[in-house]
Structures are given as C-alpha cells and as structure tokens.
Image (cartoon, rainbow, N blue to C red; front, side):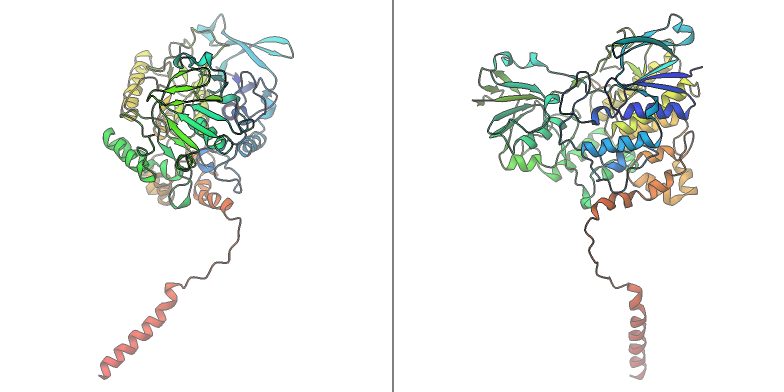
Amino acid sequence: MVKTVAIIGAGISGLGAIKACLEEGLEPTCFERSDDIGGLWRFTDEVEDGRASIYKSLVTNVSKEIMCQSDFPMPEDFPNFLPNHKYFEYIRLYAENFNLVKYIKLKTSVCRVEKHTDFPVNGQWLVTTESNGVKKTDIFDAVMVCTGQHAKPALYLENLPGINTFRGKILHCREYKRPIGFDGKQVLIIGMGNTGVDIATELCTKASQVYLSCKTGVWVFGRLGKGGLPFDLGFLRRSLNWINNIMPPAVSRWMLKKDMNDHFNHDLYNIQPEGTVWREPLVNEELPSRILSGSIMIKPQVKKFTETSVHFEDGSVVENLDIVILATGYEYSFPFLDESIIKKDENRGSCYKKIIPLGIEKPTLAFIAFILPIGPTMVVAELQSRWATRLFKELHKLPDPEGMRKEMLRDEERRKKWFATSENNFRRTNYISYLDDLASDIGVSLNIWKLFLTDPVLAWKVVFGPCNSYQLRLTGPGKWDGAREAIMTQWDRIAKPLSTRVVKKKTKANLLSFIPWILCVGILLFAVCLKG
C-alpha cells in the first residue's frame, strides 16, 4: 500500500499534487530546485538553468473562472485575464489556504530516481536529492513528476541553414525578458505560437521593423469575446463539445474556419492554416492591428541566413538584420530517470491516460501536466493528480495490458478525428472529453440527466455555461460543498473587476407599471364603444 510520495516540482501542478495526496491520506514530500514555489509563473529577471522562464509582460490566455483550481475560486477583484504576477499571487494564496508549503523542500534538486531492487514486488523508488552540496537518498512508495514542459528550449538550428554565420544576436524566447535593447533594430522572430506573437507585438513598438516567420499559418483568437466577455467562456462549453463530437470532423473544422474568419480574414493576412491538420490557436488581440499598421510583417519559412541577412522561401530577402529570436518551443526531458522507464513517443504515446508509463511493473510513477489540451493545463493537472493518487491507493485499477493497448489505439483514433492526424501529437487532447474520461475513472463525473431532474438550474449552467473546474467537485470523492455556489456566482466574479467606475444607471420603466394605465385606457375605449 502506497503511503509516502515524492513530488518533483513546486509549480501549480506540484501544489495540486501535494493537495491530492493529502486528500487521500498520503504523505507527500515535494522537492523544488529553486528558492520559491510557482514554477513557470514566478518571474525573475535572470534565466535560471533547468527552470521555465517567462517575460515580464506575460498575461494568461485563459480567463480566471476557467483556469482556477477546482475548490479555490480566484478573488473576485482579480482581473479576468491575469498578468503573470497576479497569477503567481493566486498560487501563493492557494498554497497558504491549504497549508501546502510545509511539505516542500526548497533549494533541493532531484538527481536520480531509480527503481528499488524489489520494485516488481513493492513498487518503491530510490530518490536521490542534493541540497547545499549534500546528497541524500530516500525510499518512496510512489513518485509524481511535475517538472513542466517549458524548461529545455528546442532550437532546431539544423533547419536554419547558415545560422552559424549570422553576425547578429541570436536568442531563444526563454532568454527574452523585457523590450530593452531593441530600439531601432530589425528583428526576425521565428515561430508563430503564443510566445512568438506576444514578443512580436511588444517589440514592434521599439524596433524599426519586426518580421514574423512561420512555416504554417495559425488561427488567432482575441481575449475579447462576444458581448465583451472573455472568449473562452463561450468556447469551452459542454453543449458545444457534444455538438463537435457528434458532427463529422470535416463539418466541425469548416465551422471553426468560418468562425475564425468572421473575426478577420486569416487568408488576407497570409496566416490561414493550410490543409486539414489542426493547428493550435494562439490568443492575441493585437496581431491583426500590428500587421495592418506595418509594424509586423508576416514572412514565410526561412531558406537561409548570411552574415547580415535572411532569405525566405518566397525569394524575398531582409538585409541588415540585427536580431533573431527563436520562438521554436520546448522539449521535455527527465534527466533524473533512466531512459528504459519512459520512452518518448509523440506518435503512438508512451503513457496510459497520458499519466502512467506503459510497461511499468507497478503503477507508482505518474507524470503530471505533460499534456497539451485545448484548454487550461492547470485544471487537467489537478485532476490527473487526483486520478493518480487514487490509483496509488488502489481505489481504481488499470486495465490489463490488452485493455491498455486498446485504449491507446482508441486515443490514436480520437486524435485522428479531432486533429486530422495522430502524428507528433500524443500530448494533444480534447479538453472536456479528457476531463470527463478521468473523472469517470475516479467516480467524480456528473450524471447530467439525473442532475436535470434534481437540480435543473445547476444542470443548465453545467451544460450550457462555461465548463469550469468546479464541476469536478460537485460529486464523488473530494466533493466540495462550495462547488455549486461557485458555479452559480461565477458571473459575479467575472463582472466585479470591470465595475471600477460606478455609474448611476437610469431607472428603466417596469412593464408591469403600465398595466393599470393600459387597463384604464381599455375600459375607457370599451365604454366609448358601448355609448356609441
């Protein structure tokens, strides 16, 4: 029986893992290599080796009511989209509220995680850590890896002929912190994900010209949705997810294309994705206007570099280029684990339910938040931790090897349906469907039809309102008594930070107040008719 659990990393995923362990009566010990909690969301001016790095202006691209932890709503006065320092403040509040910090060992690096000699029998792990130059090895019954996906930059320099001859400055986006030192420069940003576009829209106010190079196009969302509300409140809904799952994939993709182009014509801006393969949308409301103003220029794939210029696939050339920023993403790695424990396979997959390594004798190792959902990763990570800790306690079990093989094949087929391919996208998943799958395994999924009979108002909000994490605390193990109230009051917390200017509203005439007058006029007309 699992009792002690080692958790690697004290970001929001690691904190959620600590809490999940405590809910199941387990004894967690969390190891964090830096001197504070927060992981990715703790901004520093320096780039720290082995830790995710963000830029000063980073703002969340998911709204607060969608991304918060399932039993801890964000303060009502917090903005709907949070600057990184504000989300870090929320992480601190979460850790303090549930008294999680005492389980964390800061400035402690995990050097090695190895199977115990009797692992096939007891499933235990030898965890070697280092703190203040002193190494120590302890035995744990289970391990949860929460180190994140954004610590090791992916450079792909082999795809950039001549880059080694370029005399200007070259940096990966993890090295970018503030728009300092770019005044009057010509800047090329390679990669059109959220980070690349964020940096481009910030730098174009300083640089003489910003060029944004992309191999394929991308769909662009703005944070501002229908009626001025956060866009994801309308995008992530169970009702829409059901419709998309029922419709033929081609129809669903056509509807997405139409909806995206209703905001602005992506083809006109030369950024429309090609073919049918799903491309991760980016969230940035500034990009179209910056392209319109000419301060950002969209360019095709790079063909080659020279000492002072860059040549593109369409034959165009930019001379006197000063700076190249590689917004080419990240790779994830586990230097503390033997390669035989987990073999990365982004096509067919290497983890059951994207959590437990395939082929492991005892399921006492869990990978948390190594996933790319079309929705907030932190909500998925929290549920993954609840799923894993209940598995450690044998409160639910894995299928046999044949059952796991079939599940992996089903996942592959679902990815083909949702994203038009299953190549190089194992971590990608449908957000709501994946949450429902894990919730069903641990007994916290909702019986929607029963809910319509017992609480129709709540059921309506669950199905046709935003799909937020509170829904995962309405029933079953870990049920939170405040979940219903959190769902019913979510719109108050959405409106609150917008109500910073009190305006005396004109009193609208109530229709009921006119009824006596209408009756009087009716009676008078009736009387006139009788007299006539």
